[in-house]
Length: 117
Image 1 (cartoon, helix red, strand yellow):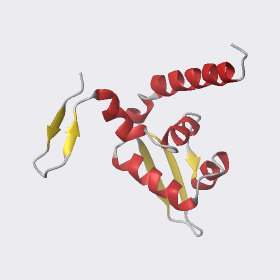
Image 2: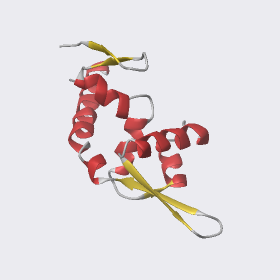
Image 3: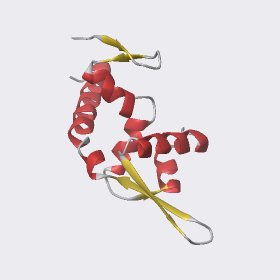
């Protein structure tokens, strides 16, 4: 059941758990970023290469939001040039089942659109 609650600041909050999940991992880029990170620790440039249509600014923004939500961690090495690595937190790894299901559904949908299934 979908209900709306008014927050003390005046913003409306939805109590739907699906929408709550989508607020954290939804959007055009976050699912792809998280799917790529399932393979292990990645550097910024590696992520950028696996998602070629994303801008550097958008990738940075999406990574910051995922870090703020505790889904990924970020480690900066004190080197010149600086090296930054990103990986899934334990909490972020709990999304694996959701991402796997989304991937399976996406493959089925692609086949259906192509008239294969």
